[in-house]
Length: 420
Ligand SMILES: [Zn+2]
Image (cartoon, rainbow, N blue to C red; front, top):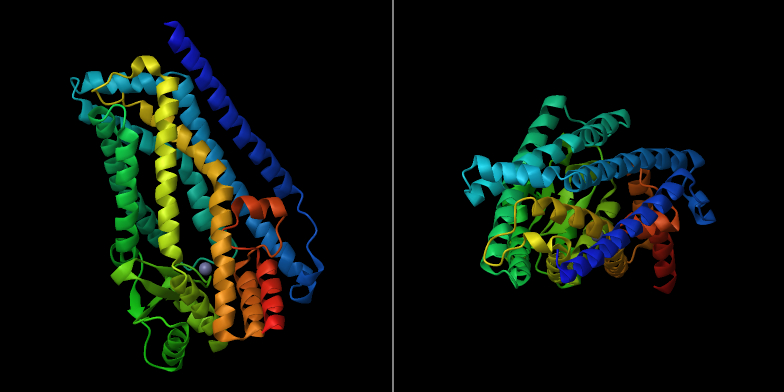
């Protein structure tokens, strides 16, 4: 080993140590606040009973534990594969077995890691997606239909992440020193294509969508879109009730595929005024260009990720990189460890960005409906029926909430109502 390599390795261990230390610190705090929730603000008791608060807290606690354990299991598996040398052994085994045909070996290596991760994650996916959903009375799915969903989603994931992985390795051979630019560009194009195609290609694989029928709700949507100054041609209704009793709505797509989607549960179980408040919120996302803003930041995030990855791989395994040749397949495992750690640390940033957009959408929605009491009613109903934790600890909200906590949304509606 040269002196330079030694220095690089030392630098790499410091960087990995820092990343692991930060994640461990956040997880410790997260566990602390999961086990010992903080008292809720007094505003909550005007709208919720202690039973409401307790039930939601228990449900969310189990869901959060399950997803934290799944994260730890996957990250632990990847670290073990890397540190025990098993990833490198599997990688050279695949190269030998395939007669040094690199892409065949990389493909086989990818599939083995994908299957291992899938197996480790399965108990948690089944527990939180099927068992818990039935236990808490949300799921309307049979076991068979859950399996159909699971297999379909896994197939899509295998295809897309497999293509992404091979493209990544190809770039490392094609542009040894600047592949991170190419990878960032591929990722940016993919984000654009995915956002555009998701509502018309991927979502229909799992749900049926029908345009909202003529009637009072449709007239309300038309009136609302005129007030918002938007050309909302179609609002779609999704058969969410085939899986869950939870209600929701979302705004999705890009350009021609832009659309507002309402869960059939929402139309069935909520008052017309509440549906209006929901539609106004989604229109506010539309009006403020939130998808495009999110997309642009996602692209910036992609470039940052790949340039950091380029650096850390170079420092971590300097002896194994041969310019002009793609990285050895087991670099996939190091890359996935890095992705696990970085995405955990990026959560608060992404969520802060998302919470700002959601608060803005709530504000604009209130300007459109001018009906703060219905807005309050909506947030109370949604939180109660979907078992959202109304007032989580500030730390949990900071780390994991993509929307402001329900009590903040209620408070904002009350304040907004005073101003109008
Ligand atoms: Zn929203």
